[in-house]
Image (tube, rainbow, N blue to C red; front, side, top):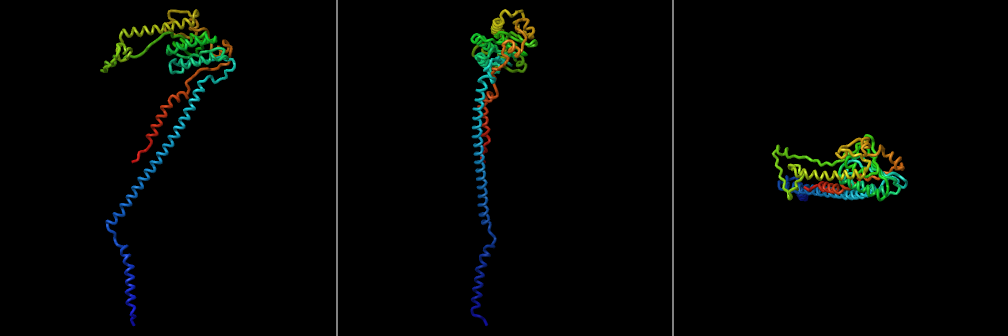
Length: 352
């Protein structure tokens, strides 16, 4: 027997089944090309934005890190600068040894005598003043080992030694090690006595001016010198221009005048002890033993000998003022700081 409600039930069931199948068919249908493009573009856009944000973030972090390092570098540089300044001031303030007891003061004159060198008038005069002003320094020794140098620097030191001797009434002795020639001997003659080693090199009382001329070489190479001056003698001693007889004579007059100044200083310092010969002022130099025989030096003796036997104060205190590592670093500090700033700025990456 057929249930009258069965067909309705079947219809309802089929309807419900149909309703439930429709979404499944919709979900399983093949997507169209336009739908795929819509999904792909947002993903690419998000990826590009993420990469860009990452680059910006990393660039910001790098810039902050560089800025932090630069700030630390500047602080450290200033700290180092002030430490070096303090070190320099303390190192130039006076001798490191104890000067409260009787002693012999020593000032070293070594290497080339020139402005800016360790054997410059600036440093040596400052050391001499400190030595003479110390009441416990019973005498001053100039410890010399120099081939010579500037007559100007030597003249300044010579004048100052004689002034300090007269002011403080304190004896000054020159002790020669390997060499005491030219401008170094100019300084030594201001001392009361000159002590040498028998093999020391002493003398060279003369003046020279050297240079090079390239005119012949330039002619061979076909190089033309184009020199324009305001003043007929402005090109005097130009190595690329021919030397005229007028210029040569002028230079010789100047050298002779400086030579006579040197000779006068030697005669004033050595006095009657000097046994002048035709070769004395020709620029020749002699051994220590010969220098004693010629009256250019007084006797053989070393630093310790003079301090012990002549000054009678065996303790030796070094008053020499030297350009130390701190001073050289301080001079170059500004340039180094600027170079560091340039390197730091160059290390900042650009955002691409």
